[in-house]
Length: 154
Image (cartoon, rainbow, N blue to C red):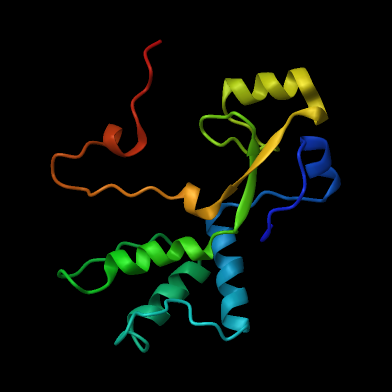
């Protein structure tokens, strides 16, 4: 959903016809919309209009993973940061969930228990696309735990 609707519960979310999408599908759908509306997909990126940008668009449309390689100053980070704009503006999450559980496909015990207890009255919150992105400089000393977090032994 591209805007932040006045939906506050899972019941209202279901009634709205909301269907969750994968991130790759979100990006693909929003990229298609930008291309159809003749909007610039990577504004401010100069010199790659006939090479890197079309290749990146094709990769995103094909739902491929992308790895940007190159020397410093070639707009790799800038392009990655601009991909945030291809996410849906807002998505619903189970209110209070630490991992932003999808209300219709919850993963955490917290969200599953809350939905079991409250059913369609379970509250949902809406998070903006900028809250869904984190950035970590991957130097040789960075571990997987640094990127995705450690498992809490408790």
